[in-house]
Length: 401
Ligand SMILES: Cc1cc2nc3c(=O)[nH]c(=O)nc-3n(C[C@H](O)[C@H](O)[C@H](O)COP(=O)(O)O)c2cc1C
Ligand SMILES: [Fe+2]
Ligand SMILES: [Fe+2]
Image 1: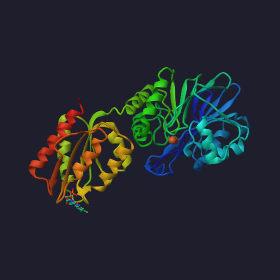
Image 2: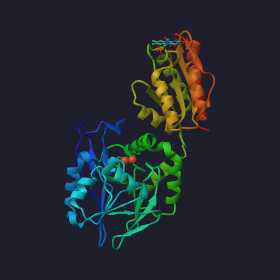
Image 3: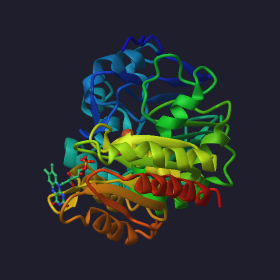
Image 4: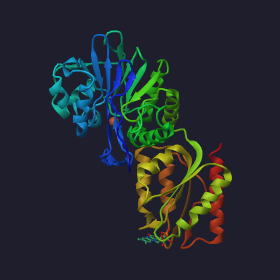
């Protein structure tokens, strides 16, 4: 995929600068989630009248570029503080190399983060631990810290700049997709980042929705002009759009629409998919079709988080659900995705039972199982195809309620 990585050293405001980097080398984020369009590790330089702070660092792989970005703005001996919202190595990996250049800098982090800095980097000195609501005066502007545990790790916090009213939110509001075109929502097509924010949320943050809700509650009284996460774009034209999205995602609030996800060894299950989709379309809601074997779980999870309705096409395999479906069912449980409307169809030959087993697993997550479980022997008959269409329509209609 062609791309240009020309966006560097952008001014966020007169005294706040983007000093992050783009990653087009890593194929799987956290060794797991595909990032075909890369990812950015955002870092920010904030200048007060008296003090200079850097907020969040970048993955070690890009440390040279990162140090160059810093050097273009300040001398290393001018850096007073390194604010570390989160110690996951995508935001902390460059710490030792930065400290070599700026040994005078004081690290600002939460209590749990201090322990992690020792665990990862054996850094123990010159650390100031901050707690909820603590302030750091840079001269003419203050940074205020809000604890944000489990969004994404237990040590995570948010940093708020009270002069420019910028929320440096680290993983919260973050997305995949590198910043090749621009760093602001008004410089790029924000819809692309919006979609990748949903995928990032479902993959990375979703497990801890309760904590996301707690964090969102804290933000309601804060005047926010910009949201500056540590992955993806800075939301300055319309920060409310991404705040509203997060409120919905954290509430597991889904849109009317159906994700049809199927697997098939010899096409018997696959042949039914178009009938199910036809039914959903008749209900007048969006439909997305994904394949257990050919789409990564990352995307299956995103679509399941986003859509109120899910219809699973699962053949029986070794006495249970087709393998890709088993992984999917396991993931729904791990991510604790609750309360979807779900239907099933699938071919079997002798024992069957894939659909029954799958539905029992999803019942535990309070998914509403829509009857009938459309399990058929071998090839689907005309009657099965019509039932499949009806199932699609019924579930499509239900997602509108
Ligand atoms: C490797 C393999 C394992 C299977 N295991 C079972 C099984 O345990 N129980 C069963 O009823 N059918 C089993 N089948 C038969 C399939 O479920 C049946 O052929 C079905 O039509 C496959 O649907 P598909 O064409 O959508 O892949 C198995 C088929 C294969 C290839
Ligand atoms: Fe993280
Ligand atoms: Fe991150």
